[in-house]
Length: 95
Length: 483
Image (cartoon, rainbow over all chains, first blue to last red; front, side, top):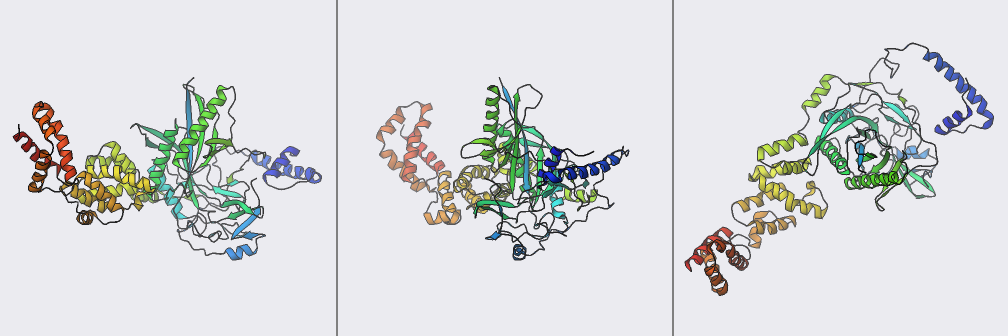
């Protein structure tokens, strides 16, 4: 079952990735393959089975509330494309 | 046609933890940009989140205070969307299994009535960073210090029916989180933010109307105004034959109007799924019960206790306990001077006016609880009259020292010396021949009222310092002797 073009475009927009018209058919087919796998899973009878939040049968360890991290701005900003006054600069997000 | 307004609130409260929800970066307010954003907050590859125990403790405290169910198991999920102040491309939040379940609180309205508002649930989630849209070479600046700060989002049922009820609910939430000490609740700094879901329907109609969501309203006053203006917009729209569109709207405080935030982009789809980086969090009964035992006295309980213990009216007790600092002030002052009613009156009168004028909270009050109690002690022991006390209060507020110092330095001590007062009374009587004549000819029933003139003159002569009881006694004796 291939995914229709409109759905592929919608998913691409939500994921902020560009999909060219040339690759559309291929992507649509591959997404369809994933859905086939999902369809197969859907046939399993899960009545009375609680949804699983995590495959490991363990619970989360919590951390004491202490500020342990030190300032790493210089290091981080050294690998950022553009910064100013300590801020990361990004393309303008509102008009 | 009579319309009914239906309101549900989503309140975000920043928790006062030292470190972030999933990292050990500091949450201190006001640090230089990006100095408190570590590799985890920045979503660097290879990092893993570890949840902060204190955030859970605070969320449980809140749930218990809201009479809500506490989930022994809660699960973090990813809410996926792209925005530059959200480096991971998703917000870690809770959806299907939040930490706090359904609950209920009582809100108190100005007319003295109260009403119950149901809590749908409250969940833990991380805050985003801040985008600054000033002109940085035509770009936006991003500060990620706030990214990852723990929040609880408190979602009410659509149980409120007026803007005033919404504000009362919001104040109650504010009061609870500050009593618990889990947040500073400062709306102006964004520690508490509010979104309002507003719809209207004809009175008697059961079906809810189409709602709009008002985003990020940042003061109690604006919440009230935004809801009022939005409800009226919807009513006008429907009465003109239009239809309300479900959308997010922004309140513009300057123009007092709401406007659509709808962009040309397609609606978001957050594609929630359980976060694979985090295991389910499980809390046991011992943990929850230990927190319950340590809960401080909450506003409702404190109000009831103050009313009972000190004989205050329900209204006064409610007013005084809305803020924990104000209740503490009241109790400290009352313990010292033993005059609960006078302390309450001064706090809601002179002190409230002073704080209002200076636009400060009671924590920054220039008159301390000890100083107010000291002032009241001097009224009660007749050292000064209530009228002079107001002058003394102002002087204390101006930093002239405590009541005794001000009274001493300004020579405001009430004159109770009968000899001195007698002399003033004689002088006034001698200078008021006409009034004395009137008094003598008046009906006996009317005489007490006529004494007011003489008392006023004597007070003036004594610059307000003569003891009114002593004046009354001497004056009456002297006037009656002339009959």
